Image (cartoon, rainbow, N blue to C red; front, side, top):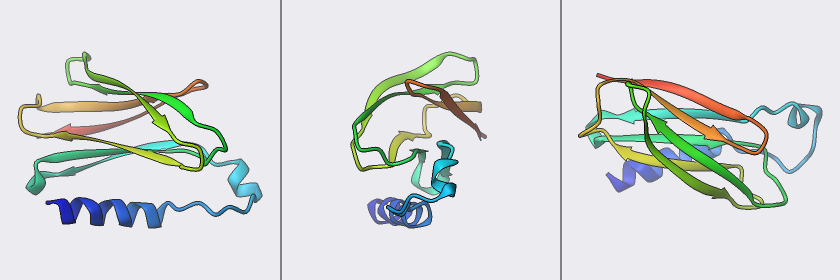
Amino acid sequence: MKKLFFFFLLCTTVLFAQTEVNTSDDLEFEPKVDCLILQDENSIICKFESFRSIKDEEIIVQWIDPQGDISRSREMLVPAGHGSIYDYRYIKGRLLGNWAFKVITEEKEYKTQFELK
């Protein structure tokens, strides 16, 4: 299980890697969130990806269940020089239906949805 998780982290890091050169595309980069459901691993892995900053960024991560209630809310830190964070939950014991994963920054909210069947 750990090997698959680390392989996923490596693949997503390589796929979404940012270069240090500032181009016009870098200036238009929009932070995003995405979730991956690994049924055979009984896990949900969600990622927030933003532009790499020279200072730490505090964010709030929320998991919202199908009933609209916040299942978990955490304050997290995106360290200076890093462009992403991951949050992880087990599938077993979660309500079935459409879930939301939301990240709140100082400037904006970013949200994605996924379905547990």
